[in-house]
Image (tube, rainbow, N blue to C red; front, side, top):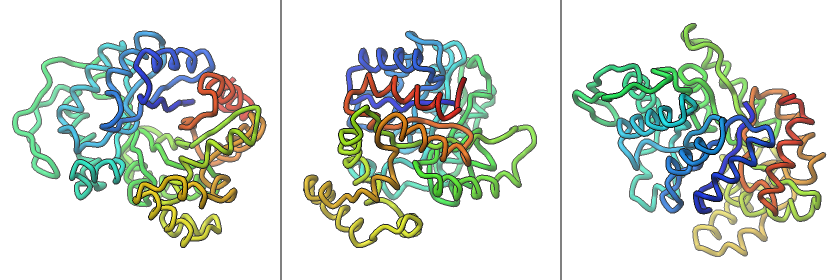
Length: 329
């Protein structure tokens, strides 16, 4: 898979146009990110599906803002509307966004696993009674999606237990990582989970969901990368910071500035080493080299935001870089 993340901070007409550009650049899957403050991901996915022949789906949506049975119906509807091209990216959600909705205490591995396990049953035509992290009684769909129960499920996450769970139960893992060392670690965790994987599920797809900023001007690309890297660094677990030799106190200060809304101060704390650890940023040649390093451990790649100073051009450059890295012909 060569995927791309499109963020519906833009009008859906533009998201559809970007989807077309991505398809022309060689991307075969578009994940539309899901946050309550942006446009609806399923509307954007439908527009991309109408304009292209690539796979589409939410990536990554959480099972707390919307009931998991309703999410299953929406994914099935997208699969029907796209002629069987839906993919379901589901995960525990962004803590800061969920905190705004009073849902941050709901996050957890079990809820993610239950949400897509129940979805698979519903897609297969079963009537579901469920009593776990959510409840459902006599729930069923009155239509069957083209893929039946085989809509691909990708779990989004980076913790060790979530990685193992994806390795055992999901079709793939969308691992938030842009550095070979992080993907090597993720590979080990996924393989540990896959030891207990049912044979009928086939192989699991480890996809590097990588933050990428690419431009012919390396300095411009790296400057843009500072903003997402600040959020990544602030949320990174101590073992991740240690893996890259990064200053935990500095990362904590970045988080404090972000929480206080002092974004300039947070961005000023971001170091070049943080950019190197948490983003593939630079010229197409540099990004292609970084992609190749990650693909020594990952099976697939999803090009995540910010993409580049010029979004349209960055999509084309990222697609060319992926070709150079060997992810597609």
